[in-house]
Image (cartoon, rainbow, N blue to C red; front, side, top):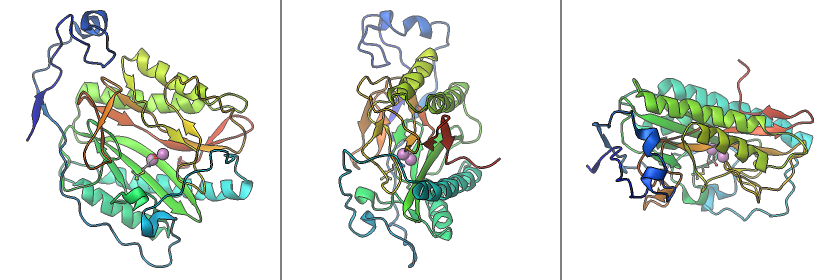
Length: 327
Ligand code: MF3
Ligand code: CO
Ligand code: CO
């Protein structure tokens, strides 16, 4: 098992651990002073054994990739303003995705494998006569994404058992009545260290400040600006490589919703638009690396990262969260 000393500090003139490219003494050195040097050696997450794809019972409506794995390109000019009959179906899909996520939360504990969580997600989704959208999406092998500790997103469920002190993001997307609902949350496994709890709390706040920035007439850029500002205020990084996305009859529509302040995010929000807000926030660098499974994205420095996601609708007044449960 590969191990690394967590939190070894760079020399004053070495590049800062946060990935900014600045010298340590000009960047995080001061912030680090006072905190005791971590002595815990933290194990990185390693790829495990992946079970065969789970079967979908007959009679469930399949998205285009279910049989082939192929996803057609989004039309860059497609309107993301959805007609009312689509919004109505998206409320049902969003609610169902949120219910599945709630059920998964109750199953998170030390000793449970991410494969078992995948099985539970799959069963809960098909029980609702929906299709687990990730399954065979561009060849993705499972029904759920399970991203542990330094895994940013798209972690593939396998035979790794959750350990006391882990954090895990579970990302549920399902396809119901021709539309997708997409949401995720990061959960604590047993007793978790203070810094990771802070990461998870701030990441949830980042999602909520992003959602609060959703207003008709305002550019999409407002969302990422609010998120990045909140993360920076807490000394945390904002992942840039993965964005929120338009969602509806397509899983990933053409519109991208960056979680950082991106001057190119000029699209003006209009009532009837549906997209996700899903910030990935890190304790260190925002830079990522990818496992050779072609999916699993990890932080480049191995420090922990968290994510929350909702599917939202732009309304005349502001925003409606479609993946929120009534209570
Ligand atoms: N649910 C993820 C998102 O938020 C996408 C997962 S695609 C998969 O966009 F293929 F990795 F499952
Ligand atoms: Co998702
Ligand atoms: Co999404």
